[in-house]
Amino acid sequence: MINNVYQLVGTKTLVVKFEDISLTQQVVVRPDFMAICHADQRYYLGMRSPDVLRKKLPMAPVHEACGTVVADPTGTFNIGDRVVMIPNVSGDVSSGLFENYAPGSAFLSSGHDGFMREFVSLPPDRVVGCGDIDPVVAAITEFVSVAAHAVCRFESLAHSNRNRIAIIGDGSMAYVVACMLRETFPSTEIVVLGHNPLKLALFTFVDKALLSSDIPEGFSFDHGFECVGSEGSASAIETLIERINPQGCIMLLGVSEQPVPVNTRMVLEKGLTMVGCSRSGRADFERAVELMSRKIVQRRLREIIFLDDAVHSVSDIKRVFANDLLTPFKTVFEWRI
Image (tube, rainbow, N blue to C red; front, side, top):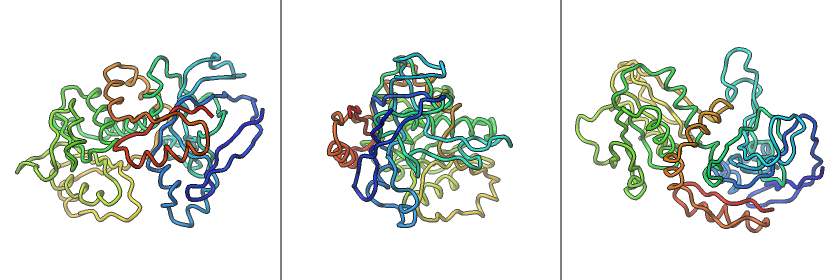
C-alpha cells in the first residue's frame, strides 16, 4: 500500500515522500483532525540548534491527531472506529519505569515521522478508541494526556494535604492541567497565576485566577504546577518555591531550551519534591479519553481551540503553521490531503 508522507526537510520546507505501508499486525488509520504543538513550531521555524535539526530531520511533523480506522488485520478495531494515536514508542519498561521515560523510547515527530501522512500504520497498543468525543477536541488528546500523566504522578507522589493547588501559567498547558485537576480533585481550591488577563478570563472553572503581579501578601499553597517554560521558567519556579508550603510537591511541565536557576537552599529548607513530567503513555491516553468523554470537559477544551480551515495541500500546511503563531492557545485543522 503506497502512502504519502509530508516531511519537514528544513526551515519552512516540506516535501512529499512516498512509502510502502506494511499491513502486518498494524492498525491503519486515516487522520481526520490534527493539532499543532510548540515543539512542531520549533522544528518548522528552525528554532532548535543546528545539531538537533541535523539529527531530527527529515521527518513528518505533528504528534496530536485523531482519525478513522480503515484497516485492522489484528482484529482489535472495527473499520470506521474513531481513534486517537499515541506518538510515544515505548521503551524497556521491564524495570517498572513509565514507557515515556524508559530506555529505548522514541517519539513520532521528533526524529521519526509524525502524523502528517495520508495514512498512519501503528501497532494496536498505540491506538485508543475515542468514541463520540467531538473530533475537533479529540485532536488534542495527546496534549491532554501529558496533563493526565502529570496529575497521575502528582497523585502518587504528593502528600495528602491538598487544600490548595497553584498553577503558574496562563497558556494551553496551564488550562488543560486546570481542567484535569478540577475533575480529579473537585473539593480542592485551584488557583491559577498568570500574566495575561485575557487568557486568565477563560479559567472560569477554577476558584481564583490572579495576575502574578497581584498575588496577595502571605498567599501560599500546598502544591504547585509549573506550566510556563521558555524564558518564564525561572520566575515561575522561583514563585513556586517561595510560596509553597513545607514538603510541597512542584510539578514541572514547562520546556526551556536554556538552563534554569533553582534556589536549592529553599528547596532543602522546605523539604520540597520537584518532579519533571514529559510526554505520556497509553495509560495516560486512556485516562485522558475517559475525562474528555465528559461533556463539560469537552466544552471547556473547545474554548482554547482555534479551528483553522481544512488542509488540502502543502501550501495549506504552511498556512496553518503561520496562523498558529497568531493564536493564543491550540490550533486544530481538518486533514483532507
